[in-house]
Amino acid sequence: MSEVRARTLPSGVSDPGAVDAVIVGAGFAGLYMLHRLRGLGFSTRVYEAGSGVGGTWFWNRYPGARCDVESLEYSYSFSDELQSDWKWTERYASQPEILSYLNHVAERFDLHRSIQFETRVTAATFDEAANRWIIRTDRGDRVSARFCIMATGCLSAAKIPELEGIETFKGKRYHTGHWPHEGVDFTGQTVGVIGTGSSAIQSIPEIARQAKQLFVFQRTPNFSVPAHNAPLSADVIQDWNANLASYRNMERTSAFGFMHEPSTKGALEVAPEERQREYETRWQRGGFHLIGAFTDILVSKDANDTAAAFVRSKIRGIVRDPAVAEALMPTSYPIGTKRLCVDTHYFATFNRSNVTLVDLQASPIEAVTTAGVRTSAAEYSLDSIVFATGFDAMTGALSNIDIRGRAGVALKQKWYEGPRTYLGIMVAGFPNLFTITGPGSPSVLSNMVVSIEQHVDWIADCLAHLREHRLALIEATLDAENAWVTHVNDVGHQTLFPLANSWYMGANIPGKPRVFMPYIGGVGPYRQKCDEVAAKGYEGFILSQAATYA
Ligand code: N01
Image (cartoon, rainbow, N blue to C red; front, side):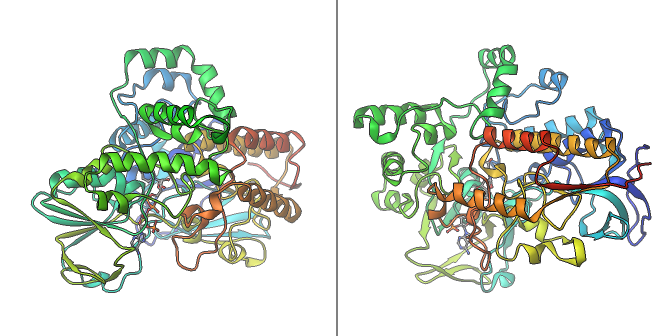
């Protein structure tokens, strides 16, 4: 099979070409998927909306943007040479470093030539007569593909809240997920940041250092733990390299896709002093380790309360003004059930004289005005507003594409009451359409790179299997899908996650169904399930004959 050369087509010109596979998106998922399919000899084209590779790391260039999974672990494992050649410099990699890494990967594996940039896929329609997907783009492309693989990301459809008067604001507006490539200089400005999720918590300390005055508009306080970011020491790197195979295996078989010290006890099984010691050790270590301190933090409210109280006591200790500290303390949901944030000096930033917390629970935003933001208590004049207001998570990027399966049924319609998938990889009624880290898989509850590699490998092996057996189609059965959705819900409801108004639950998007979208059964057990399904001849899928492969 011949490689399809990428080229940027002039607007309005349609491409009648046919390929084996179209991949939508050139982030971590799309790049590795392209590499695997090319290695298998499938003709493949990638469409990417951005002007470069990187996905999340291409768009999210806000100050302080950094991964909350440690850099050595937040990296591909598929190539030994890549692993030994690339040198991470910090414990938690910054956005520019991750983007350089992904550019390096694209160059190293010669991926650019199969990617058509600045091209957004607008529609994907399954042609039942031909058993092929017809993919259309905003540049007028029309390409037919046997397989359509969505590598569109879980947090890529940025959400600006529907606030009255937004368009009238005379100053500058930014969204953290669409940050200007040239950067923004806030020196001398009065800036408002709306939101206090991970993006806000990372950017606020950086913006505060530049701005004359910063107002932080907080609707829901967030739990955050320190990153304790630092340059990677030679010892850490040496240990990582010496134990690479076993560490990678630990990630793949773990609960969340990264290495952690597993706990063996429940939080209430130990004496208060021991509990405190354990939390303190993990706080000092930094990152997500705190949430793994005990086995039951995410399943028992009483256990969870102890971890939440510990973090609140830390906030009380860091923030000097007791009223501000109080307002920064989350109390309305269990810790960990909204994505735990990992920060560098976030709470301490509220000790600065140029930073003011605006508590929207006490006085909600009424409108954006020409001059700034008006709450029920005051009007704040601003030069710039930063919307750190998140994403239409997990389903948003897919819903933005008009995806139609058998009988012209729209995916959006099928998912009207919440996403339904088999294994988070396929959807009944949408043959040969794959969703990398789709809803119903561990995805956002895991180290994304580990989950991406697992899905890409599974999909690549599946396509090779179909070709080897001269099969045209793979399609999830409705029964398998229903059983999986029930299982995903059952497991989710054994945890505390449904208690929070989180984006995991779709709660941040008005009108979005409240469904716990990711799968919390664990990265290791999930991988095992996917492998078993494949080993049993793709149990739960219908595979059908009569393919002609070029
Ligand atoms: O978005 P969010 P994010 N008025 O949805 C508030 C990943 N990520 O971009 O909680 C006022 O978490 C909203 O308030 P509330 C990570 O998985 C990773 O920060 O809905 N406020 C909330 O405070 C993360 O979880 C990294 O009440 C409004 C904030 O905006 C995910 O991306 C870095 C509002 C949105 O927080 C999303 O994070 C960054 C309104 N109308 C992101 N609407 C790392 O790797 C929304 N809000 C470190």
